[in-house]
Image 1 (tube, rainbow, N blue to C red):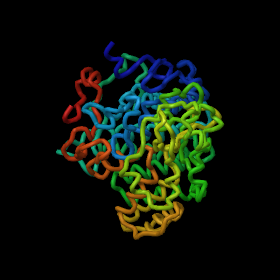
Image 2: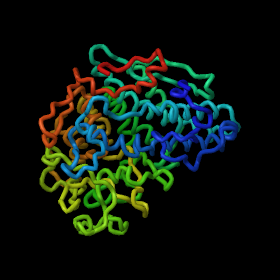
Image 3: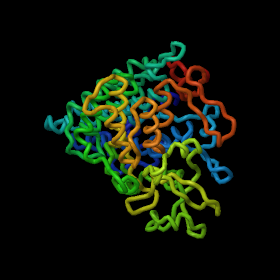
Image 4: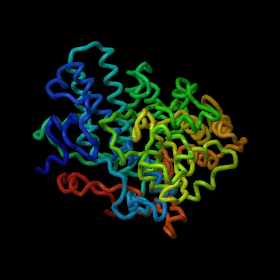
Length: 482
Protein backbone atom coordinates (compact mmCIF):
# COMPACT_ATOMS: atom_id res chain seq x y z
CA UNK A 1 0.00 0.00 0.00
CA UNK A 2 1.71 3.17 -1.20
CA UNK A 3 0.15 5.36 1.42
CA UNK A 4 2.30 3.58 3.93
CA UNK A 5 5.24 5.64 2.71
CA UNK A 6 3.67 8.55 4.52
CA UNK A 7 2.06 6.81 7.42
CA UNK A 8 1.82 3.43 9.01
CA UNK A 9 -0.71 1.85 11.32
CA UNK A 10 -1.28 3.39 14.68
CA UNK A 11 0.84 0.72 16.35
CA UNK A 12 3.69 1.49 13.97
CA UNK A 13 3.29 5.20 14.54
CA UNK A 14 3.87 4.58 18.21
CA UNK A 15 7.21 2.96 17.45
CA UNK A 16 6.24 -0.71 17.67
CA UNK A 17 6.70 -1.64 14.01
CA UNK A 18 9.95 -2.95 12.56
CA UNK A 19 11.13 0.37 11.16
CA UNK A 20 14.78 -0.68 10.96
CA UNK A 21 16.00 2.50 9.31
CA UNK A 22 15.07 4.42 12.41
CA UNK A 23 15.08 1.90 15.24
CA UNK A 24 17.02 -1.32 15.31
CA UNK A 25 14.67 -2.96 17.80
CA UNK A 26 11.36 -2.10 19.39
CA UNK A 27 12.19 -0.09 22.52
CA UNK A 28 11.18 -1.60 25.81
CA UNK A 29 9.34 1.60 26.70
CA UNK A 30 6.78 1.15 23.88
CA UNK A 31 3.21 0.41 24.93
CA UNK A 32 -0.18 -0.27 23.38
CA UNK A 33 -1.79 2.59 21.47
CA UNK A 34 -5.03 2.39 23.41
CA UNK A 35 -3.17 3.01 26.66
CA UNK A 36 -0.74 5.58 25.28
CA UNK A 37 -3.41 8.01 24.14
CA UNK A 38 -5.71 7.85 27.17
CA UNK A 39 -3.52 8.30 30.26
CA UNK A 40 -0.75 10.62 31.39
CA UNK A 41 1.42 7.58 32.11
CA UNK A 42 0.85 6.22 28.63
CA UNK A 43 1.59 9.54 26.95
CA UNK A 44 4.80 9.82 28.98
CA UNK A 45 5.83 6.35 27.82
CA UNK A 46 5.08 7.32 24.23
CA UNK A 47 7.37 10.31 24.74
CA UNK A 48 10.16 7.90 25.67
CA UNK A 49 9.55 6.16 22.35
CA UNK A 50 10.02 9.51 20.63
CA UNK A 51 13.45 9.82 22.27
CA UNK A 52 14.40 6.39 20.97
CA UNK A 53 14.47 7.77 17.43
CA UNK A 54 17.64 9.65 18.30
CA UNK A 55 19.47 6.37 18.96
CA UNK A 56 18.95 4.92 15.49
CA UNK A 57 22.02 4.16 13.37
CA UNK A 58 20.51 6.36 10.67
CA UNK A 59 20.49 9.27 13.09
CA UNK A 60 22.69 10.20 16.07
CA UNK A 61 23.46 6.57 16.84
CA UNK A 62 25.86 6.62 13.90
CA UNK A 63 25.12 8.39 10.60
CA UNK A 64 24.56 11.95 11.85
CA UNK A 65 27.69 11.74 14.00
CA UNK A 66 30.09 10.35 11.39
CA UNK A 67 28.85 11.22 7.89
CA UNK A 68 29.30 15.00 8.30
CA UNK A 69 33.01 14.36 8.95
CA UNK A 70 33.32 11.72 6.19
CA UNK A 71 31.48 13.76 3.56
CA UNK A 72 33.68 16.79 4.24
CA UNK A 73 37.39 16.70 5.06
CA UNK A 74 37.89 15.52 8.65
CA UNK A 75 38.16 11.75 8.20
CA UNK A 76 38.65 9.30 5.35
CA UNK A 77 38.71 5.50 4.87
CA UNK A 78 41.96 3.89 5.98
CA UNK A 79 43.58 2.93 2.66
CA UNK A 80 43.49 -0.81 2.04
CA UNK A 81 42.04 -1.54 5.47
CA UNK A 82 38.48 -0.26 5.16
CA UNK A 83 35.68 -2.84 5.35
CA UNK A 84 33.95 -1.08 2.43
CA UNK A 85 31.50 0.80 4.64
CA UNK A 86 30.56 4.38 3.76
CA UNK A 87 33.10 4.45 0.92
CA UNK A 88 30.60 6.13 -1.40
CA UNK A 89 29.90 8.76 1.25
CA UNK A 90 33.59 9.56 1.54
CA UNK A 91 33.76 10.50 -2.14
CA UNK A 92 30.26 12.02 -2.26
CA UNK A 93 29.01 9.64 -4.93
CA UNK A 94 25.83 10.85 -6.68
CA UNK A 95 22.76 9.95 -4.66
CA UNK A 96 24.84 9.13 -1.58
CA UNK A 97 24.05 11.32 1.42
CA UNK A 98 22.51 11.19 4.85
CA UNK A 99 18.82 10.31 5.00
CA UNK A 100 16.28 11.31 7.64
CA UNK A 101 13.01 11.34 5.72
CA UNK A 102 11.80 8.40 7.81
CA UNK A 103 11.37 10.81 10.74
CA UNK A 104 7.99 11.73 9.29
CA UNK A 105 6.52 8.28 9.98
CA UNK A 106 8.33 7.87 13.26
CA UNK A 107 9.55 10.75 15.37
CA UNK A 108 7.47 13.62 14.01
CA UNK A 109 4.18 11.76 13.93
CA UNK A 110 4.88 10.27 17.35
CA UNK A 111 5.63 13.66 18.85
CA UNK A 112 2.48 15.14 17.29
CA UNK A 113 0.48 12.33 18.88
CA UNK A 114 2.07 13.18 22.23
CA UNK A 115 1.21 16.87 21.90
CA UNK A 116 -2.39 16.21 20.92
CA UNK A 117 -2.96 13.48 23.51
CA UNK A 118 -1.49 15.52 26.36
CA UNK A 119 -4.31 18.01 25.98
CA UNK A 120 -6.93 15.28 26.29
CA UNK A 121 -5.76 13.19 29.25
CA UNK A 122 -6.17 13.77 32.96
CA UNK A 123 -3.20 15.01 34.92
CA UNK A 124 -1.75 18.04 36.65
CA UNK A 125 -0.67 21.02 34.58
CA UNK A 126 2.87 20.56 35.86
CA UNK A 127 2.93 16.98 34.50
CA UNK A 128 1.53 18.15 31.18
CA UNK A 129 3.99 21.02 30.90
CA UNK A 130 6.87 18.62 31.43
CA UNK A 131 5.66 16.38 28.61
CA UNK A 132 4.77 19.21 26.24
CA UNK A 133 8.05 21.02 26.80
CA UNK A 134 10.03 17.93 25.87
CA UNK A 135 7.76 17.17 22.91
CA UNK A 136 8.12 20.67 21.43
CA UNK A 137 11.88 20.51 21.92
CA UNK A 138 12.13 17.15 20.17
CA UNK A 139 9.94 18.25 17.28
CA UNK A 140 12.12 21.31 16.83
CA UNK A 141 15.26 19.17 16.81
CA UNK A 142 13.79 16.76 14.26
CA UNK A 143 12.73 19.59 11.96
CA UNK A 144 16.01 21.41 12.27
CA UNK A 145 17.97 18.31 11.30
CA UNK A 146 15.60 17.70 8.39
CA UNK A 147 15.70 21.24 7.03
CA UNK A 148 19.48 21.59 7.17
CA UNK A 149 19.78 18.30 5.29
CA UNK A 150 17.16 18.80 2.57
CA UNK A 151 17.17 22.60 2.22
CA UNK A 152 19.73 25.34 1.71
CA UNK A 153 20.73 27.58 4.58
CA UNK A 154 18.23 30.48 4.75
CA UNK A 155 21.08 32.98 4.40
CA UNK A 156 22.43 31.34 1.25
CA UNK A 157 19.55 30.26 -0.98
CA UNK A 158 20.81 29.04 -4.37
CA UNK A 159 19.01 30.06 -7.59
CA UNK A 160 15.90 31.01 -5.64
CA UNK A 161 15.27 27.40 -4.52
CA UNK A 162 14.00 28.07 -1.02
CA UNK A 163 12.18 24.79 -0.41
CA UNK A 164 12.60 23.28 3.01
CA UNK A 165 10.56 20.31 4.23
CA UNK A 166 6.81 19.89 4.81
CA UNK A 167 5.64 21.12 8.20
CA UNK A 168 3.29 18.51 9.61
CA UNK A 169 2.09 19.71 13.01
CA UNK A 170 -0.92 17.43 13.52
CA UNK A 171 -0.78 13.66 14.01
CA UNK A 172 -1.79 11.12 11.39
CA UNK A 173 -3.47 8.44 13.51
CA UNK A 174 -4.81 6.24 10.68
CA UNK A 175 -4.31 5.56 6.98
CA UNK A 176 -7.58 7.33 6.24
CA UNK A 177 -6.13 10.54 7.68
CA UNK A 178 -3.12 10.60 5.36
CA UNK A 179 -2.42 13.95 3.71
CA UNK A 180 0.20 14.82 1.09
CA UNK A 181 1.77 18.12 2.13
CA UNK A 182 3.92 20.38 -0.02
CA UNK A 183 7.34 21.58 1.13
CA UNK A 184 7.34 24.71 3.24
CA UNK A 185 10.04 27.29 2.66
CA UNK A 186 13.25 27.09 4.64
CA UNK A 187 12.34 30.31 6.40
CA UNK A 188 8.93 28.95 7.43
CA UNK A 189 10.53 25.82 8.85
CA UNK A 190 13.07 27.84 10.84
CA UNK A 191 10.27 30.00 12.24
CA UNK A 192 8.39 26.90 13.42
CA UNK A 193 11.56 25.52 15.00
CA UNK A 194 11.93 28.82 16.86
CA UNK A 195 8.30 28.69 18.03
CA UNK A 196 8.70 25.15 19.35
CA UNK A 197 11.98 25.83 21.14
CA UNK A 198 10.66 28.98 22.78
CA UNK A 199 7.64 26.98 23.97
CA UNK A 200 9.97 24.29 25.27
CA UNK A 201 12.07 26.82 27.15
CA UNK A 202 9.01 28.37 28.77
CA UNK A 203 7.48 25.06 29.84
CA UNK A 204 10.54 23.31 31.29
CA UNK A 205 12.98 23.54 34.16
CA UNK A 206 16.27 21.68 34.61
CA UNK A 207 15.27 18.98 37.08
CA UNK A 208 15.13 16.13 34.56
CA UNK A 209 18.88 15.85 33.89
CA UNK A 210 20.71 15.81 30.60
CA UNK A 211 19.18 12.66 29.10
CA UNK A 212 15.99 14.62 28.46
CA UNK A 213 15.10 17.93 26.85
CA UNK A 214 15.33 20.60 29.57
CA UNK A 215 15.15 24.37 29.68
CA UNK A 216 18.93 24.56 29.22
CA UNK A 217 19.07 22.10 26.32
CA UNK A 218 16.24 23.97 24.57
CA UNK A 219 18.20 27.19 25.00
CA UNK A 220 21.39 25.55 23.75
CA UNK A 221 19.74 24.09 20.65
CA UNK A 222 18.06 27.44 19.95
CA UNK A 223 21.40 29.23 20.19
CA UNK A 224 22.77 26.95 17.48
CA UNK A 225 19.64 27.37 15.34
CA UNK A 226 20.01 31.15 15.56
CA UNK A 227 23.70 30.84 14.62
CA UNK A 228 22.78 28.90 11.47
CA UNK A 229 19.95 31.34 10.77
CA UNK A 230 22.30 34.32 10.93
CA UNK A 231 20.46 35.82 13.90
CA UNK A 232 23.67 36.45 15.78
CA UNK A 233 22.45 38.69 18.60
CA UNK A 234 19.84 36.08 19.53
CA UNK A 235 22.41 33.29 19.21
CA UNK A 236 24.67 35.05 21.70
CA UNK A 237 21.78 35.65 24.10
CA UNK A 238 20.68 32.02 24.12
CA UNK A 239 24.19 30.62 24.31
CA UNK A 240 24.74 32.90 27.30
CA UNK A 241 21.57 31.65 29.00
CA UNK A 242 22.65 28.03 28.53
CA UNK A 243 26.18 28.78 29.74
CA UNK A 244 24.78 30.44 32.85
CA UNK A 245 23.12 27.14 33.74
CA UNK A 246 25.72 24.66 32.46
CA UNK A 247 29.03 26.52 32.35
CA UNK A 248 30.33 24.84 35.49
CA UNK A 249 30.52 21.54 33.58
CA UNK A 250 33.32 22.87 31.35
CA UNK A 251 36.23 20.47 31.81
CA UNK A 252 39.88 21.47 31.91
CA UNK A 253 43.35 19.94 31.67
CA UNK A 254 43.71 16.18 31.64
CA UNK A 255 39.99 15.83 32.26
CA UNK A 256 39.36 16.82 28.65
CA UNK A 257 40.41 13.50 27.11
CA UNK A 258 39.05 11.40 29.96
CA UNK A 259 35.66 13.12 29.66
CA UNK A 260 35.07 11.17 26.44
CA UNK A 261 35.67 7.91 28.30
CA UNK A 262 33.07 8.67 30.96
CA UNK A 263 29.70 6.97 31.00
CA UNK A 264 28.17 10.42 30.99
CA UNK A 265 30.33 13.11 29.42
CA UNK A 266 30.29 15.90 32.02
CA UNK A 267 30.00 18.54 29.30
CA UNK A 268 26.88 17.02 27.72
CA UNK A 269 23.96 19.44 27.46
CA UNK A 270 21.80 16.68 26.00
CA UNK A 271 22.92 13.06 26.22
CA UNK A 272 21.60 10.34 23.93
CA UNK A 273 21.51 7.25 26.11
CA UNK A 274 21.80 3.65 24.98
CA UNK A 275 20.61 0.34 26.40
CA UNK A 276 21.25 -3.24 25.31
CA UNK A 277 18.15 -3.28 23.14
CA UNK A 278 19.14 -0.19 21.16
CA UNK A 279 22.84 -0.95 20.68
CA UNK A 280 23.52 -2.46 17.26
CA UNK A 281 26.93 -4.04 17.91
CA UNK A 282 29.31 -3.38 15.01
CA UNK A 283 27.06 -0.78 13.40
CA UNK A 284 27.63 1.50 16.36
CA UNK A 285 29.46 4.80 16.13
CA UNK A 286 32.36 3.42 18.17
CA UNK A 287 32.87 0.49 15.80
CA UNK A 288 33.24 2.70 12.73
CA UNK A 289 35.82 4.93 14.38
CA UNK A 290 38.16 2.38 15.98
CA UNK A 291 39.05 -1.22 16.58
CA UNK A 292 39.42 -1.65 20.32
CA UNK A 293 40.27 -4.53 22.63
CA UNK A 294 37.58 -7.17 22.99
CA UNK A 295 38.46 -7.21 26.69
CA UNK A 296 36.37 -4.31 27.89
CA UNK A 297 38.74 -3.68 30.80
CA UNK A 298 41.45 -2.68 28.30
CA UNK A 299 39.41 -0.05 26.46
CA UNK A 300 41.75 2.69 27.71
CA UNK A 301 44.93 0.60 27.55
CA UNK A 302 47.08 2.09 24.78
CA UNK A 303 49.38 -0.95 24.71
CA UNK A 304 46.37 -3.18 23.97
CA UNK A 305 45.33 -0.93 21.07
CA UNK A 306 48.86 -1.11 19.65
CA UNK A 307 49.22 -4.88 20.15
CA UNK A 308 48.33 -6.74 16.96
CA UNK A 309 47.96 -9.98 18.91
CA UNK A 310 45.26 -8.47 21.13
CA UNK A 311 41.78 -9.61 20.10
CA UNK A 312 39.94 -6.59 18.71
CA UNK A 313 36.32 -5.73 17.98
CA UNK A 314 34.86 -3.06 15.74
CA UNK A 315 35.66 -2.05 12.18
CA UNK A 316 37.99 0.90 12.77
CA UNK A 317 37.50 2.02 9.18
CA UNK A 318 38.27 5.75 9.35
CA UNK A 319 41.24 7.91 10.22
CA UNK A 320 41.73 11.69 10.55
CA UNK A 321 42.77 13.47 7.35
CA UNK A 322 46.23 15.04 6.97
CA UNK A 323 44.54 18.44 6.72
CA UNK A 324 42.86 18.04 10.10
CA UNK A 325 45.98 16.70 11.78
CA UNK A 326 47.96 19.69 10.50
CA UNK A 327 45.66 22.09 12.35
CA UNK A 328 46.65 20.85 15.82
CA UNK A 329 49.27 23.09 17.38
CA UNK A 330 52.04 21.69 19.55
CA UNK A 331 50.75 20.94 23.04
CA UNK A 332 47.04 20.96 22.15
CA UNK A 333 45.42 18.58 24.66
CA UNK A 334 42.67 17.81 22.16
CA UNK A 335 45.20 15.92 20.07
CA UNK A 336 44.94 13.29 22.80
CA UNK A 337 41.57 12.22 21.37
CA UNK A 338 43.49 10.88 18.36
CA UNK A 339 45.65 7.90 19.26
CA UNK A 340 47.25 4.95 17.52
CA UNK A 341 46.05 1.42 17.07
CA UNK A 342 47.25 -1.59 15.12
CA UNK A 343 44.92 -2.95 12.46
CA UNK A 344 46.09 -6.01 10.50
CA UNK A 345 49.54 -5.25 11.89
CA UNK A 346 49.50 -1.74 10.43
CA UNK A 347 49.78 1.26 12.77
CA UNK A 348 46.89 3.66 12.15
CA UNK A 349 45.52 6.81 13.76
CA UNK A 350 42.15 6.37 15.44
CA UNK A 351 39.77 9.04 16.69
CA UNK A 352 38.95 7.90 20.20
CA UNK A 353 36.26 10.28 21.31
CA UNK A 354 33.94 7.31 21.05
CA UNK A 355 35.23 4.62 23.38
CA UNK A 356 32.80 2.05 24.83
CA UNK A 357 31.61 2.82 28.34
CA UNK A 358 28.80 1.59 30.59
CA UNK A 359 30.66 -1.68 31.18
CA UNK A 360 29.93 -3.23 27.78
CA UNK A 361 31.59 -2.83 24.39
CA UNK A 362 29.56 -0.84 21.85
CA UNK A 363 27.58 1.00 24.48
CA UNK A 364 28.29 4.66 24.89
CA UNK A 365 26.09 7.63 25.60
CA UNK A 366 26.49 10.26 22.89
CA UNK A 367 26.49 14.00 23.72
CA UNK A 368 24.34 15.81 21.20
CA UNK A 369 25.79 19.17 22.24
CA UNK A 370 28.55 20.04 24.73
CA UNK A 371 29.11 23.15 26.81
CA UNK A 372 32.41 23.82 24.99
CA UNK A 373 30.45 24.47 21.84
CA UNK A 374 28.29 27.03 23.63
CA UNK A 375 31.36 29.18 24.27
CA UNK A 376 32.25 28.96 20.58
CA UNK A 377 28.69 29.82 19.56
CA UNK A 378 28.69 32.81 21.88
CA UNK A 379 32.12 33.89 20.59
CA UNK A 380 31.13 33.72 16.93
CA UNK A 381 27.72 35.26 17.47
CA UNK A 382 29.08 38.16 19.52
CA UNK A 383 31.90 38.77 17.05
CA UNK A 384 29.58 38.83 14.03
CA UNK A 385 26.97 40.96 15.84
CA UNK A 386 29.53 43.35 17.33
CA UNK A 387 28.22 42.62 20.83
CA UNK A 388 29.65 41.25 24.06
CA UNK A 389 26.70 39.41 25.58
CA UNK A 390 27.96 37.50 28.61
CA UNK A 391 31.60 37.88 27.60
CA UNK A 392 33.64 39.27 24.75
CA UNK A 393 34.36 37.09 21.73
CA UNK A 394 38.04 37.29 22.62
CA UNK A 395 37.36 36.01 26.15
CA UNK A 396 35.39 33.02 24.91
CA UNK A 397 37.96 32.17 22.25
CA UNK A 398 40.68 32.37 24.89
CA UNK A 399 38.68 30.07 27.18
CA UNK A 400 38.74 27.31 24.57
CA UNK A 401 42.39 27.82 23.59
CA UNK A 402 43.77 28.20 27.09
CA UNK A 403 41.97 25.04 28.19
CA UNK A 404 43.66 23.31 25.26
CA UNK A 405 47.05 24.51 26.52
CA UNK A 406 47.45 27.07 23.74
CA UNK A 407 48.23 30.80 23.83
CA UNK A 408 45.72 33.52 23.05
CA UNK A 409 45.39 34.66 19.43
CA UNK A 410 43.50 37.73 18.14
CA UNK A 411 39.84 36.94 17.70
CA UNK A 412 38.50 36.68 14.16
CA UNK A 413 35.91 34.61 12.32
CA UNK A 414 38.71 32.47 10.91
CA UNK A 415 40.19 31.86 14.37
CA UNK A 416 36.80 30.88 15.81
CA UNK A 417 35.99 28.55 12.91
CA UNK A 418 39.38 26.88 13.26
CA UNK A 419 38.66 26.19 16.93
CA UNK A 420 35.20 24.87 16.03
CA UNK A 421 36.72 22.42 13.57
CA UNK A 422 39.25 21.10 16.09
CA UNK A 423 36.97 21.16 19.13
CA UNK A 424 34.05 19.45 17.37
CA UNK A 425 36.05 17.05 15.20
CA UNK A 426 34.40 13.60 15.00
CA UNK A 427 31.17 14.94 16.52
CA UNK A 428 29.21 15.46 13.31
CA UNK A 429 29.55 19.20 12.65
CA UNK A 430 32.06 19.72 9.83
CA UNK A 431 29.71 19.34 6.81
CA UNK A 432 27.00 21.46 8.41
CA UNK A 433 29.46 24.13 9.59
CA UNK A 434 30.56 24.65 5.99
CA UNK A 435 27.15 24.68 4.32
CA UNK A 436 25.60 26.95 6.96
CA UNK A 437 28.03 29.61 5.74
CA UNK A 438 27.45 28.93 2.05
CA UNK A 439 30.98 27.57 1.68
CA UNK A 440 32.26 24.91 -0.68
CA UNK A 441 33.02 21.57 0.98
CA UNK A 442 36.69 20.64 0.44
CA UNK A 443 37.89 17.07 0.07
CA UNK A 444 41.08 15.66 1.54
CA UNK A 445 44.14 15.20 -0.66
CA UNK A 446 44.35 11.72 0.90
CA UNK A 447 41.46 10.72 -1.39
CA UNK A 448 43.26 11.89 -4.51
CA UNK A 449 42.30 14.78 -6.76
CA UNK A 450 38.62 15.25 -5.83
CA UNK A 451 37.16 18.68 -6.46
CA UNK A 452 35.36 20.47 -3.63
CA UNK A 453 31.57 20.20 -3.46
CA UNK A 454 30.62 23.66 -4.71
CA UNK A 455 27.87 25.21 -2.60
CA UNK A 456 26.36 27.36 -5.36
CA UNK A 457 26.40 24.81 -8.19
CA UNK A 458 26.75 21.23 -6.93
CA UNK A 459 23.46 19.45 -6.33
CA UNK A 460 25.13 17.12 -3.82
CA UNK A 461 24.98 19.86 -1.18
CA UNK A 462 21.37 18.79 -0.57
CA UNK A 463 20.19 15.28 0.23
CA UNK A 464 17.78 13.57 -2.16
CA UNK A 465 14.16 13.10 -1.17
CA UNK A 466 13.32 9.38 -1.45
CA UNK A 467 11.95 8.46 -4.88
CA UNK A 468 9.10 6.49 -3.34
CA UNK A 469 7.81 9.53 -1.49
CA UNK A 470 8.07 11.71 -4.58
CA UNK A 471 6.05 9.17 -6.56
CA UNK A 472 3.30 8.97 -3.93
CA UNK A 473 3.01 12.65 -3.03
CA UNK A 474 2.31 14.82 -6.10
CA UNK A 475 2.82 17.96 -3.99
CA UNK A 476 6.47 17.22 -3.24
CA UNK A 477 9.15 18.94 -5.32
CA UNK A 478 12.45 17.09 -5.60
CA UNK A 479 15.76 18.79 -4.94
CA UNK A 480 17.55 20.19 -8.00
CA UNK A 481 19.85 17.81 -9.82
CA UNK A 482 18.21 14.56 -8.70
